Image (cartoon, rainbow, N blue to C red):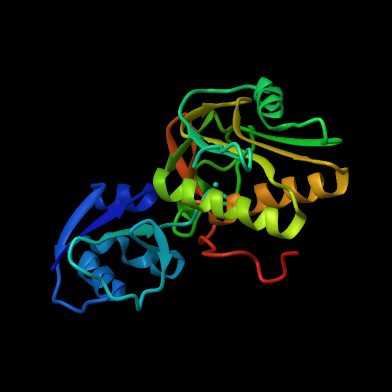
Length: 252
């Protein structure tokens, strides 16, 4: 059988390609696909402990058996990083175009109803100080120690990212009763001081809106296949932690 491997962020850079076609024996699993990929691109091998996998845009275990034509995404540490329907008034998007603080008002106008007494908005911005380097990026981060971040660059597996954001919105509706929610994330280059993510939660009461907004940003950063690199004057560092494939066990 033939499958397609998709590579992102630091793995894409190490392998020097975004996609790899592999011919594998029938009945092979994702672990076998990883081994075959490492045989072609040994530089990615040290990152195995922090890699998660997705089969056809859904998180999957290494033991998942593959079929001819499958797409397997190798998910390096993520940046922590559907449309709206008339029934749920939900907005989940990946946007390449810049947005500013006005997006909070835009999303509020799209979501709020006369029955809503609370709107909680969150805006994430590019800051000048660096974050935690992804596994394998420690030496590069040390090289830029003490330097100012000039911009962030985001890369996303867009179909899967939107699906994960939609799942997070489903969880928020079930946990907190908040149906009107927006999560909008940038892709591409986001200069210093500009917004990279906007979250708006709209509800009848403030407690539910606060809880929903906090859950939305925390779970997006932990689970969505969106990668972040901090850009410096003479290089960049990938940021983040191994992706979590589902909700936190203690989330409430």
